[in-house]
Amino acid sequence: MKPSRKVFYRVFGVMIFLTLASMGISLLNFKGINMYLLLTFACIQACVVLFYYMDLRSSSHLTWIVAGVGFFWLGILMVLVMSDVLSRNWIPTPGW
Amino acid sequence: LSNSSSVVAHQFDDHVQQRDANYLGMWIFLVTEIMFFGGLFAGYTLYRSMYPEAFAEGSRHLSMALGGINTALLALSTLMVTLAVESAREEKPRAVCKFLSYAMILGVIFLSIKFLEYYQKWQENLVPGAQFQYQGTQPHELQLFYSFYFVMTSIHALHLLIGIFIIGGLVIWMGRRPDKARPNAFIEMTGLYWHFVDIIWIFIFPLLYLARQ
Image (cartoon, rainbow over all chains, first blue to last red; front, side, top):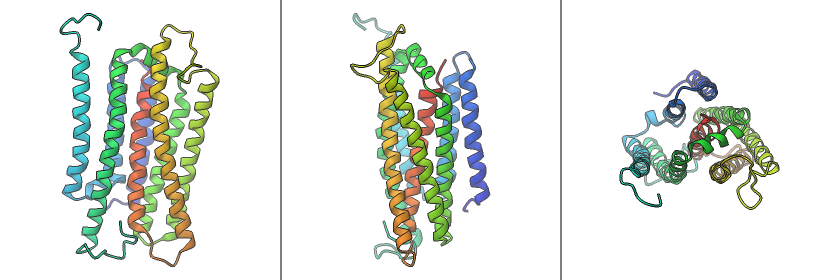
């Protein structure tokens, strides 16, 4: 079922609200979780755009798989990069 | 892509199959874009974890107000594109042209603000390279931050510029040939591209402008 225009306006409101909330978070110190909060809000905004504006909700299963694979590969890239960074100090190596 | 939603190309059984094929093809392209920007985001993540203080300092240099205004402009433009796509489905070509024109104007304002920011950084000698000057404690690491800032935002701006040209072409095409079949499939795919560019900015904004702690 296609969302109505009212839904699109609400989505825009959510986008603006989350942007303002993110700006508010950046001015406060949440003891190390600022980045996680910012990325959580960004992910919510991205999901809202994907599902409502980009019509992923009513797309075919094959489109879902293709879109999901893109984000899954991105996840693999991030996990492998961070696993390298976080494990560098496990074995002390001169020059690092 | 077919030139009109009212015409089913001979290789498809019906409109639904044609629409699904259009979406699938566009999404395959967008996945390559995800991987392209993913490399940049991975590089940013790596260096931010190595130099968190310098990157936070870099974020504090950037104007949160200008970044926030640009985020709102893109959110509004992506709403306009959505309304244009809806109008195309309802066979309202005038409304399509109107909403696409609004989106294009908002995109141009976004780019103008972006270039204003670039100009400010140029004036402050914060563009990476031989002219880079910073009196703080970590000038090299800050230069790295600005390298990511300029590369990520300029590639995003290039994508937006391409979107503006595509939308501009669509508006001109529809304005000159109002009696011809509307390129609804092309409008929908342009909409997907524009929304994707917005999603990229949704992540660039917090990572570069808001990660100040």
